[in-house]
Length: 429
Image 1 (cartoon, rainbow, N blue to C red):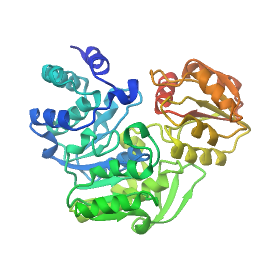
Image 2 (cartoon, rainbow, N blue to C red):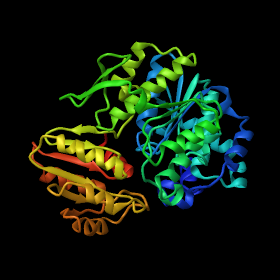
Image 3 (tube, rainbow, N blue to C red):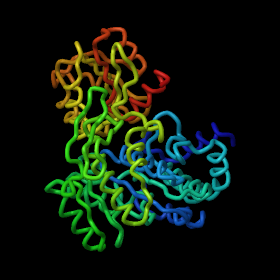
Image 4 (tube, rainbow, N blue to C red):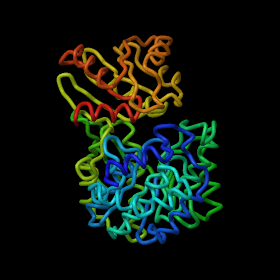
């Protein structure tokens, strides 16, 4: 197979969550262990850091990878989903896995895959672990795909586990209470391995503490450590943090939620240094200041145009949208134009309830089967006082917004990771 044929196999022969949702989710780690044994346990050949959470785990993973890379470590980074290119999921020192490696990995193991019928994510996780071992990375930052306890990344034994936060998402798979979701995320806590908890709630704190106690895992609660003394969002859209260890730390990622992610990363860095990692102050400053350049991260309060200002963000659940709405309120504009699409298995009504009523809306759908139909979305939105027109593709919605928006307006694009992905393709960012 060539690369195109290999991608076709991965997307069309294996269950893919982003296409079909919960039916692609395989509960249990049997396939992961089977593939891992076939590959001779590649993840045991380098150090790992495991990152779970409802929101912020992607930003946290990229920040850690940037800092480790700038500290001189050959650093693997495994995240999901991708936005434009499948290979975004698997990177070493910011460089994507080669097409040749993707092809050779699938060719080598396709007969075995056809026997055990793994999911798309089980195969891509194994591919990442194998690639990092082949390329002899020093350390890999591994982002959980979904949940934690039964996620196929959970076969690793990391140097530190991180859980950013808990909120409602994927409730059909993870549970419909915050404590139930927390229990699934807490499944990444390992015996005697330190765990950093980015945020706790009354419903989740004891879940984490009890699990950590049962595993004899040291716990760092970021809210109690409070590593950031003050934080200011500058006119340039970047954070200026005053921290206990790093005065005047500039954060390139400007979303409001990034203050919590930054605090979580700073606590994780302290733990890693205690475990013997050589992380320089200059690496921390450079990692925070240039994370996008270093890792290729996209879609986090990303400004991709001016006059009118065009911003996109991958926030896609209730807690994520809350932060985005607060951030949009801080933008100076004549009019706010919102291009929005939502995946049908999200809490659509709760998201729509949060959105500003004085914006002009362009309702659309991403190019995946799980996307909520744009006319249904527009009808639901009308019930919450949100008015606008519907467009069958993200590209059409963006074109309409750009035609209507004035030079002092703001166009925001979001509601779904996959809307952002379509926007990046449309705008060729």
